[in-house]
Amino acid sequence: MTRIQHLINGQAVESAQYFETVNPATQEVLAEVARGGAAEVNAAVAAAKAAFPAWAARPATERAALMRKLGNLISQHVPEIATTETRDTGQVISQTGKQLVPRAADNFHYFAEMCVRTDGHTYPTPTHLNYTLFHPVGVCALISPWNVPFMTATWKVAPCLAFGNTAVLKMSELSPLTAARLGELALEAGIPAGVLNIVHGYGTETGEPLVAHPDVRAISFTGSTVTGNRIVKSAGLKKFSMELGGKSPFVVFADADLDRALDAAVFMIFSNNGERCTAGSRILVQRSIYAEFAAKFAARAARIQVGDPLDEKTIIGPMISPGHLAKVRHYIELGQKEGATLLTGGLGAPDLPTHLQAGNFVRPTVFADVDNRMTIAQDEIFGPVACLIAFEDEAEAIVIANDTQYGLSSYVWTENIGKAHRVAAAIEAGMCFVNSQNVRDLRQPFGGTKASGTGREGGTWSYEVFLEPKNVAVSL
Ligand code: NAD
Image 1 (spheres, rainbow, N blue to C red):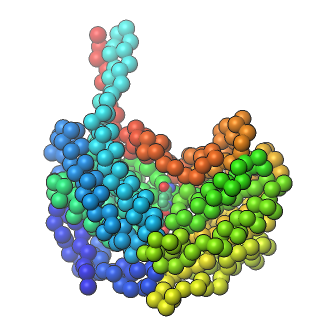
Image 2 (cartoon, helix red, strand yellow):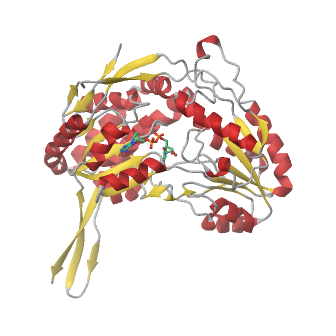
Image 3 (tube, rainbow, N blue to C red):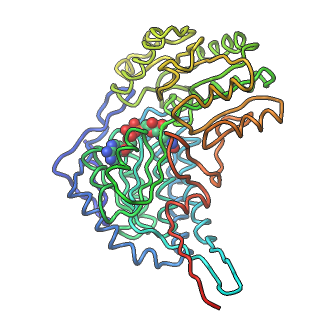
């Protein structure tokens, strides 16, 4: 049995206890993983603290060169890492292999370039010359969820290290394998011992002591809103980036390009198994085209291939765990009780080959006639369950779009340019895509408002988390 250890100060470190990580498509045990607690967290933070002064003092060009090496190593190992990620998470191989792991390499190349270009500001006055210095923050806690774990980890590790900080990374206990590989590749790239440390384990046993540690200066967290709230309370005064849950509106006006909107709507709720923070899970459709849209959307959903995530043709793989499958199924049951109309999917088992019979599979499910106040429209289901909601006009679309605790992403489909801009401005969300699915540019501010989080990451927005500005005022 493969054993995954912590990475502390450049060394593989054992734990007294281990937990198993399981392939969600088959329930096969993939590895035993070290189960860290306060002792391992303390050792990792101490290693990161000791490595910080020398790493922060390295010229940005040297750090950038190491980031590029790591990016290149990831690129050389895409098939291997993607297969491991798919086996560990159930995220389909067409996504991990073609999108998510290549983007992880891009993260290192992008922030390599950013860190050498970081400059300050000057604010001259008649009496003083003010200028800003950007210092690295110190030891950062980077905490990742189980959906797209490798890409998310690198999205944090790359800017953190490139800007001169050191890190303790904690992956989700449900998807630890590819981060362990990232640690090996980081050492192979020549990143010094202690700069990137990885401690595996459960949220309460490993995550809590990490966020509460007094030597941790910044926390970049991606995960649920419930955990985000808990971390803010236990961590005390630190820099935070909180990338939390979502229930994003996907608004389709009658004048939209219907075929393109349908393709994007299907993609935004069913790709990545629906386990996607920016999922367009509330699909708001103008009443005059609602019936046509619903019929076509349901027909497309019914054709989606559910099955082996290692098969290139599969669109929906298994849910991450039996517990998460039970949650998704609970919402499918609840939707019917709440009076929504089940157009396709539901609780029946998908048609699967024998080797996948024990997997955590669910059929892509579409509910029509959803009222936005129903629980299925308010709670983040985080699975392949779409809610179709009718609206009359622009004003009502905005009211419904904003009638949620969340504010992560949003999508607006219309051929009327003025309406597109008005609605994009009115929706309470960190991001709005007009006539588009979610397309990332690494310079964009990524993040949400309301219960979807605080802070933004990406491009210079990552300064907010990983750099500390200092103003120097010189009397003239
Ligand atoms: P989660 O909150 O259960 O866990 C996330 C991470 O936090 C895990 O590593 C977990 O072990 C750790 N953790 C749990 N309790 C902790 C504690 N008390 N202290 C410190 N760490 C703790 O989330 P999840 O189920 O792994 O992920 C799904 C959620 O993540 C969804 O809500 C999804 O929307 C969200 N998400 C958000 C984004 C975004 O960018 N906004 C991206 C991906 C996922």
